[in-house]
Amino acid sequence: MSDMNALVKFSEESLEYYNQTSKTPMKLVMFLEAIEHVARVSRVIRQPQGNALLLGVGGSGRKSSAYLAASMAGYDVFQIEISSKYGVEEWHEGIYIFIFHLFFFFNNL
Image (cartoon, rainbow, N blue to C red):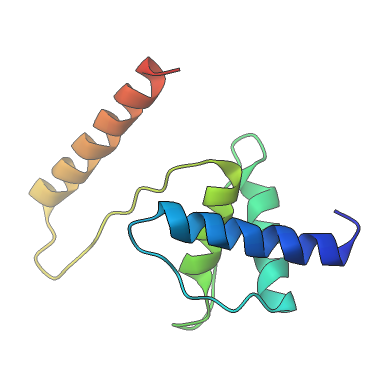
């Protein structure tokens, strides 16, 4: 998008849609720098085999940017929660759930 006002409006509408459809809505202020980060992540993950490593201090918005960009692209997000008792059994369970979701995704195309 070349028009920054249109990008701001689109980002705010995307956040509103995410909050209406998500089990865990995000209370975000979409300032210009945050919008630029979401746009970058969105551009990268829409590429074939696109992926990104987001670096930053805790609370800088990496997870929020990734979730919002995935929502804008129409993707589902799968996250493995690692705890102190995380082991091989939990790893297998996470992979099983991931493959289960893939199976249903490709069967519903």
